[in-house]
Amino acid sequence: HRLLGGLHFRFGNMTAARAEMELCAAREPTNGGTWFNLSNVLDRLGERSGSKAAMDRYLELIEWEVAGVDLLKRVARNPNSGRVRFRLAEALKKAGRTEQAFQELTRAAELAPNDREIQGVLAEAKTYMEQAAMRRRGGGPSSGQPR
Image 1 (tube, rainbow, N blue to C red):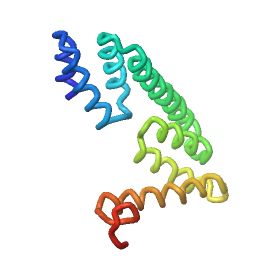
Image 2: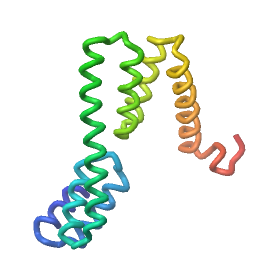
Image 3: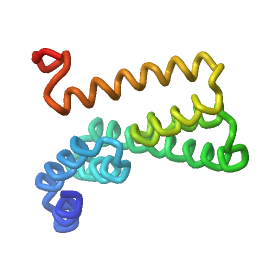
Image 4: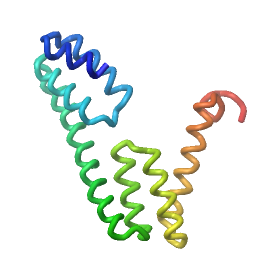
C-alpha cells in the first residue's frame, strides 16, 4: 500500500495517494515514513491542518527513534544498568516498539530487582500483555466471553 500510495503521489493522483497512506498509517501507526508521506499528500491537497498533524506525528516518532538510538549507545557502554535499560524501554514504547520495550523492561527488572518503579511498571506491562493476548485469542474482559 505504501508503494502504491507513492506511485499515485508521483503521478498526481492525490486522492488515491491519500487513501493508501491513510490505510498504511492505520495499519502501522509507528511508521514515521508513512506519516511523512501522508503529510506531503495532504499538503498537496491543500489540507494544511491535516498535513501539520501528520508532520507532527512524524517528528514525534523521529524524536523517540533518536532517543532510542542514544539510549542504545548508553546500554552498550553500561549493559548492566537497570535504570538505563528502563529508560530505553520507555523510549521504545513511545516509538511504538512494544515487544522490544517489554524485552528491555524485563531485562531492566532482572538487573534491578530492588527498584520498585521498574518492578511496578513490569507488573503492569505483564498484565497488559496477558490481557492483549487473551483479546487476540477471543477471550478476556472486553470480548464478553467468560475467562
